[in-house]
Image (cartoon, rainbow, N blue to C red; front, side):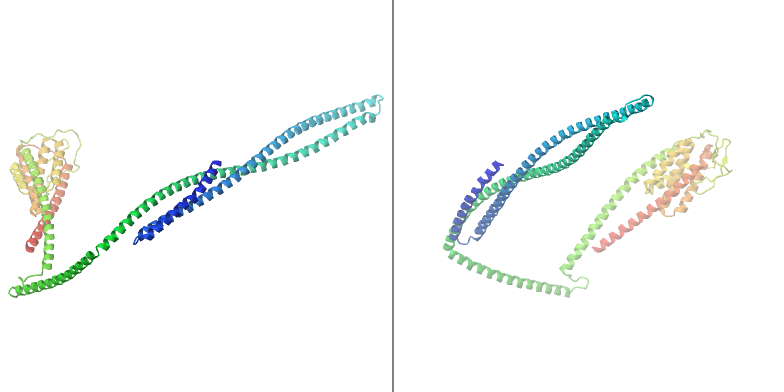
Length: 543
């Protein structure tokens, strides 16, 4: 703390010396500025810097005064803490003395209690002896009881007096202990207050350190500001020199400035004349255009008349936007056509595979009976693809057998495949369904596999007929003809194809769903074609 005080005392005399130097520099600057002409911004900058310096010096003085006040308060608190520590030491000594007195008094109390117990025991013994004496007096002649009891009663009185004195001493000791406890509580409170004051002193010391750091920062800022002021003064000197040189040059070049002003005035007059001529020329052009339009429209029809340029440009922009939209739609249509061509190629490959499979030799072996379960509960069941009813009979093994005469199934299948090749524009769902039906049909043996192939061909024929427009009638006829041809072919080959009724129902559902999908696809393609035609016609008519 002494070091801090010395530093504060050392910092205090530096302030006026620095102020004197700054006042002198400011006076020199004022004298220098009095010699200058037209340098108001520089003077404003210098005054601003001087004001900042004064503010910083004022802040420094306030910080130093705060530091001194804090040091004085800190010293006073240290003195108070020392006094409190001395009082605490005295109170501790008093507490030790009272504790020693309490210990001695407690020992006296214990001794007195022991004596009391001994006196009571002696009393009881004396009473016992008296009883014996009374008992003995009845038998023998004894001395009087009063002579025996008198000394004992005197001893009892003395013991009782001592007991009363000891009780009074105990009461006084209790009072002293209570007083000492109250003094101890007061001492603890004073100790707590002293600890709080010590913590406050620590906080003040920390704040003092922070203020010292801030003072150091302010000193550094003052140094930086001094350097900046010196730089600004040097710049001001340079600027004053340049101003003087410029004033001399201005005085020397006054004639040149007058000539330049004359030329500028002439240029402005020429610009005004040019603007007036431009306006007259624009008016002449507008009049010429109007005359040309009127002359051109005199000998033309109402449809061939010349339109204004703005209208023509607006119509041209509108038509260019429509052309761009049509180009975008054409690109989209080309992409869809390419994708449909790719799908068509895929479908053609699939149809070739199907034709190769159908041209193979049919196997006339029937499925061996594996389970004894029957798939029908009645004598007959509906097992037709196109709506025809085939009478189903129960075989002795419990399986459904379907036999019908056939004529030429291969020719019908080849014709259906050629029709599909001509009008193959279905979706991938139909062929996926066909492949699914083929995969399902492979489980039932060679005969069931051939039947599934024939049903796929029937499905292709039905989709082609739906593309042509007569969906219901064409599909029913193709389905019935194909089923009849397949039945005739199976009758000629003398092979019975055993297929469950559940499979036929599933195939019929797939055929119906495929018809719906093909019809929707056909309608969407027609709508797209109509839209493209309308766009093309509008495009051509626009041009």
